[in-house]
Amino acid sequence: MEDATSLVLRAKDGDVHAFAGLYAQIYKDLYRFAVCMMRDRQEAEDAVSEAVVAAYENIGKLRSRD
Image (cartoon, one colour):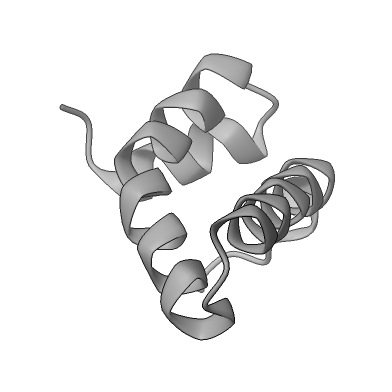
């Protein structure tokens, strides 16, 4: 499994597969957090979906650590 940092860097450069790999690594934790916060599974699924779409659309805007 590739580490999250390299996946983010590749996704930032437009690699769709890297973004999918990053999503696969964090989905369960993201969903669990959303369910805990919202107390409703459907709302949690919607929130996660919206967050992932927004992340995909804006990942290129990330600044480097330097």
